[in-house]
Length: 233
Image 1 (cartoon, rainbow, N blue to C red):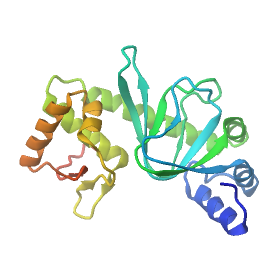
Image 2 (cartoon, rainbow, N blue to C red):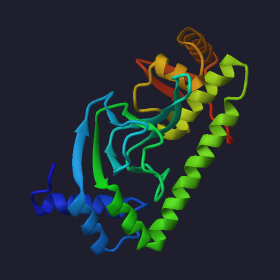
Image 3 (tube, rainbow, N blue to C red):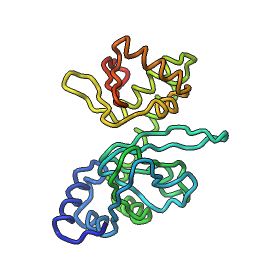
């Protein structure tokens, strides 16, 4: 979609300014980004870019949710992160990588703003505060990934599934007034089994146990986390 009128232009300028990673930018750089921006929509299950593709675009997720993952040497999908609305990506490989280090797939229908990677990187170079924000975002990504790896180092299938649910809640869940966490996007047992590294059958059994213990609710593919400790989020 190409911006054809002033109302569209103003809307997306405000969207970018409200996003912490773009908020330090002056009107000059906001306008530069919008002039280069393309708005696209994708259906659920579409690949935005694949691991190894030429790293030529930077993205800002406006609506919907996506996931990033890479393929290991055995061809197995290894989850990296979920991406929720009002998040930009990819940060890994800035200024040095020629190829994407992972794949991004849509989990729902999404609306995304795309920018040429060279344009974004040049704006980063010229804006120290924006560069600082990008470094902070990369640090958060690394911390989240390391924490998830530590949680998954267990032989207990139940712990792996429970930690996977907590991870999903941390990534794309919404805190409710009663301090529970609602994941407002459908998560299948197959998807959860990939995150937890367990079979679909084992995942189903562990989810049933967690429901029986009143730790979670799972209805029509939607999770609600009822028990959250301070170390989980």
